[in-house]
Structures are given as C-alpha cells and as structure tokens.
Image (cartoon, rainbow, N blue to C red; front, side):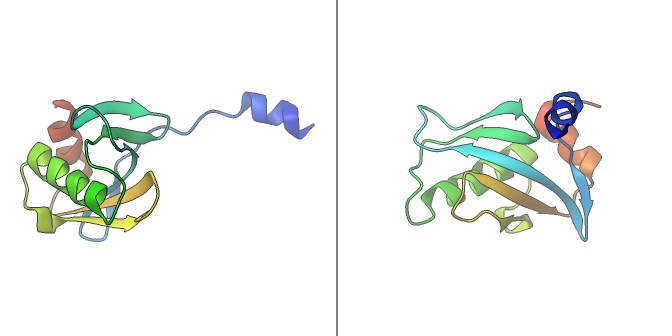
Length: 109
C-alpha cells in the first residue's frame, strides 16, 4: 500500500522561507562545472553550478560569492547553515525577505 501512496505524493516545491533574520532556501551545488551560474530550480532546491572543486571549502566560498553578487548583498549576509560538506545545502540570507530574494534570483516581481 505504501508504494501506491508514494505514486500520488506530490514532489516538494522550491520555497524560499522566512528565517529568523531574513530568508532561507535549499541549494544543490554542482562543483567543477564549466562556469559559475545559477541554473534554476531542480526539485526542491536552487541548482547552482560552480567551477570550484569541493575541496577545502573552495566550492562553499564560490557559492557565497556567486549568491552575494546575484543578490547584490555582502558576503557576510550569507551563511551556509547546513550541508557544509554536501552538494545539498541550506542557505540563510540576512536582511532580505523571501520575496526580495526571489525577485533578485529570478527577476520576478
């Protein structure tokens, strides 16, 4: 019976949620890509390609730099709150509401 239920279960959507001091959202990082880019949404996460390898925090630093540039904020406003050593990360943005993050990432609004 559980197999039938899993077929009807809706996949999770990408959501930018309210965080204590701003917004939070999941990211899926693809390291060692040909260029740094926010590719879009895959599943329930923002898909980001980075040229940096996943070694000694290089990909994490590249992710923070790319998001800071895209969101037009300081790097100090971005924190990786989960997934430091994983491709799947949770990002916290201080000082922006979810709607502002969405507008800056996707140009909506």
